[in-house]
Image (cartoon, rainbow, N blue to C red; front, top):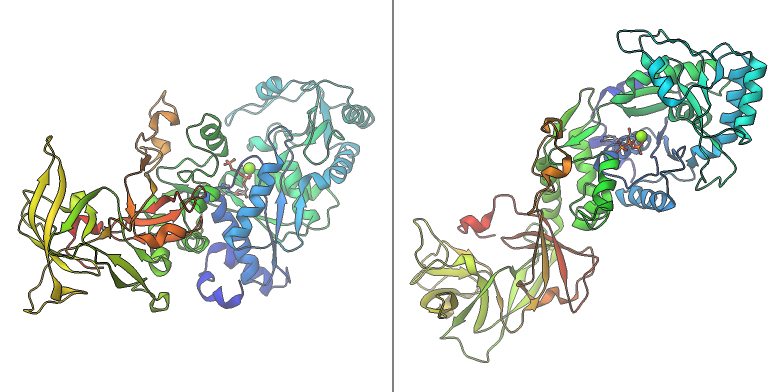
Length: 564
Ligand code: ATP
Ligand code: MG
């Protein structure tokens, strides 16, 4: 991605204004941002917003964006997540070049800085348990109480801290705390814990450490060590900013990055917390992190969303200072816009009923020409086989059509897309009354549209040639949840109480035009009048599987008046 995308991405926002000023007055010469995921789950669409923001700023200002794994909690982290995060960022179209870092790379320096704080009387070893610390912490209206260990002499603290490091103490029995102010109106400043004992194996440092630094302490120092200029994070860290600045003010770090907060992305009908997403995976509610119903980047990729659509979405929502919920429809809009330009049109019948053209020769097969994409002349044309026996959509026929029905009905005439006009002459049913076949007559002069007498038909329907069509499994998705706003969850309810039982419907009755026999996973199409579909990873040449990406905008199938 070069600078050609500047025009669009450079739409101003308050973060860009800060950067513009910093460059203008010489505070910085080069913009350095970072994306700091914790490798404890797959990335979701909220992360995509942060990635587009951080990498987008670096791109537009000719700077650089670091990828840094915030791996300070060995218990929840996993290399599977590290790998998936890197794959997802690359897929989104961004590149950290050689700037790949791990917070764990700084464990030695973080430790040395902690000793420095101790020697300067700015940190102490506390013997209170986690619960006791919480109880001493006070509330928003009441100050906290000093820990009885707060005034330990520096030498004693140093000795204890080193013995913590050497594994002498049990988990939870001691912690290292910053010595700031137990009466601060900001709870984050009330002597926060900066190191805890955790006798856990780390995915990178192995068993070297039994004490691990806390996020607030690690993050600001990592930023400073990497020379980050603008440390952009979500709003919930606003109250942590004084702590971010406090650590950097106390320590001899190479620079002092500026923390800037923006509103996190919330999407309607979607949960975005990794803890909840993990729960969906672990309990088997979804098939995995890449289930096409998941709001993860991996899920959206598998569903068939393109990186371009996700970047466009990130651009459109922009960055703001206030939290809000973005309508899922906007994401779908971006996906449709993108697919409309790039997805070839093909014909597939979801719920087939046989249509026989009684006046069409029995063994004749015509190859009819069809545009691959009317939006894109470069997409070319293809040939579709047409014969006497076809399948059409069961719901495109009505024996007793309501007023304004333009599709097929007894005695009515419709256009078969790319083919002939046909008129329904007879309806065949089985003993149960179910329609099994529609017998029609065709107008040979109407091939490819138009008639000798200039008469018009309003309805156009899609079809496939019965003998040439192929079967496929189609997976039709809907929202995973029935609740739009999870802030409005009823009391005593769990998010799993709002699962949508209809979020996945699998149909194996579909018949597809034969050009779809050889698709590769990830290929996207518009199944005319039905929606956009993407060949799934499970798809095989003899057994195609398609995910429905999105339905068509205005559900043309219900109107059937408009040709494509
Ligand atoms: P979760 O609450 O799901 O665990 P997190 O914020 O803990 O998310 P991180 O891996 O720490 O996940 O996030 C990495 C970066 O992505 C952070 O800078 C964070 O601010 C940003 N981020 C996470 N969720 C969102 C969101 N919904 N919208 C925008 N940015 C987000
Ligand atoms: Mg986090």
